[in-house]
Length: 152
Image (cartoon, rainbow, N blue to C red; front, side, top):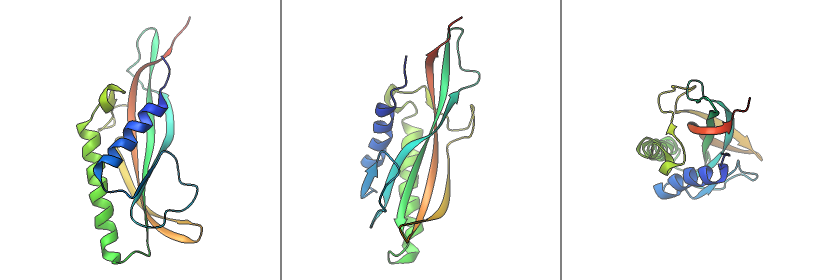
């Protein structure tokens, strides 16, 4: 079996699009800064064996994606930035909990961190091209069964 990253990324992007919270959803970290509204970007952060999930002849993997939300700090009212971001984040976390296997593409979203860091997010700020953004980065850990064949 091989990693079908494109299909997995499309499924994660699909959750963001279906939420209705985003002006744009990218399958990569943006090359140019978002200009307004809330933008979502999805990309690969880390991959490695998922301890305790591999069989005798195959290795399962833990694939961590970053799902980052961007919102320009210059938007008004400023007091609405974090509530708008949290509404979008809440919708995404609900989607990941509700579609635990991403439609059968993965064994599971590692919600509680059985195989590494759990589903989580961190707020912060980012300056890109001279523009300040409020960002929230979700770490989306996925466990993919029997990804690599073990050969003696």
